[in-house]
Length: 72
Image 1 (cartoon, rainbow, N blue to C red):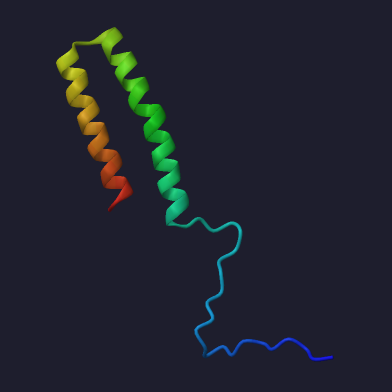
Image 2: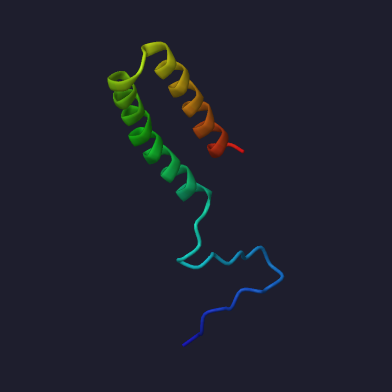
């Protein structure tokens, strides 16, 4: 019976991070979910409280902030 070969540390073997580490994909998912919740809430609240032009400008600004956070 042969034992499994251990990869050479000098090879192209790359260890994965632990389960507690968050990668870029999880950050993007958090931003997508947050933007899908925050933007409609901002629109609904703004139309109830302020004028349409101010709300449209605020929503466009909020979208640019989210894009800046997603792609720094």
